[in-house]
Image (tube, rainbow, N blue to C red; front, side, top):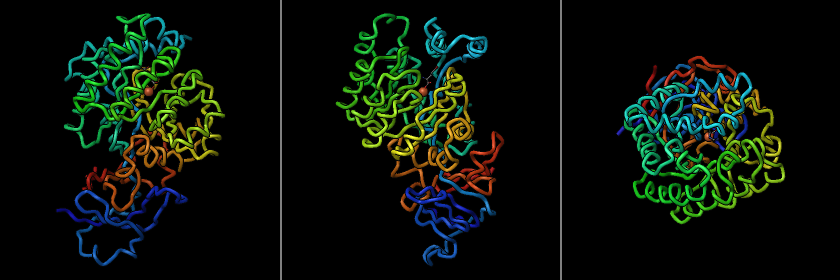
Amino acid sequence: MSERVFHACSAATMLVDEQDYGLIDDAAIAAKDGRIEWVGAAGNLPELYQGWSKTDLGGALVTPALIDCHTHLVFGGDRSHEFSLRLVGASYEEIARAGGGINSTVEATRAASDEELLASALTRVDDLISDGVAVIEVKSGYGLTIEHELRMLRVARAIEQHRPVRICTSWLAAHALPPEYADAPDAYIDEVAIPGLEKAQGEGLVDAVDGFCEGIGFTPEQIRRVFEKARELGIPVKLHAEQLSDLKGAMLASEFDALSADHLEYLAEEDVPTLAEKGVVAVMLPGAFYALRESKLPPIDALRANTVPMAVATDSNPGSSPMSSLRLAMNMACTLFRLTPEEALAGTTRNAAAALGIGSEYGSIEAGKRCDLAVWNATHPNYLSYWIAGDLLRGPISAGKFNEH
Ligand code: NIG
Ligand code: FE
């Protein structure tokens, strides 16, 4: 049994409905067996906790551990050559249609061994951990055969055996059409995406089902068929929607009570109230916006006005968002999308937890939730979005244990 009080810190609790980060200037946090028992002003610490061992955090800032709720960080190879092509004018869509893009990563992923996939994923996981991240969503989508998609999710799950992070997996077989199904997208959905999902579910590999609803991905009708199978199996859905065009993917996702709709640059303002009504989290991916030099902004004002919860994630992948810093994504969300630093932090804590369906356990510093926190060399939570790069993390508190760097 482990009982401990963390004190001499300021705590951004990120409680819902609180202003100003729910910030407590001189805070104490009591944790037992990896759970938070009490949080509040140090002067109000109940007697019950006063005899517990103490950890002095030396005036540091404490936040909930960060959550990256949208990544593709298991993949083979890289696409640095496409970066060069895009710099001289080729577009993401042109490269994809010419057989590059996602399919070039599919080739490299199929060719890599499990060990190679895991080793390269761990380098990106380590980058995220050094940014205070304790929960990472990882998608399949670069295997595109049943066996290679399952393999990607097995590798994703294996990350938990090697690093102190929780992994949430998403089945993204409906990501791109592999060469062996060129011109046969419906057959691909029937023969790979749907039966593979049943198999993955049978192996306990799937926490959510995702799709890429786009001209270079799949139509809403094709995604609908995958979502119907997800509903039958009782698995929540999410969707890459309105990234490059408006195919009404977010409306489809809402119809299926999706956890989240992601990207949303081309989301029509008139569709925003439906997201709000259905409690769908809008996941902002400014790294992809930046890397693709997109100019159309997601309808942030309408999302805000309708109080749609907004999350922020890296979209870490070798093509559209080659990055592995969640704090950089927060900075980009502020600079490019005009989120406030408080919205950006809510987007990588409370709202990111909601986007993964784990809000009862993660995302705020609150009695009953897991004591997974981040201790920062920063005086104010604004700083986490403001400062670009650098190593701000003093250490994670994982399951109630402080691992100072
Ligand atoms: O979220 N949009 C589709 N999927 C990824 C890109 C994957 C890739 O280019 O490899 C995204 O941007
Ligand atoms: Fe993505």
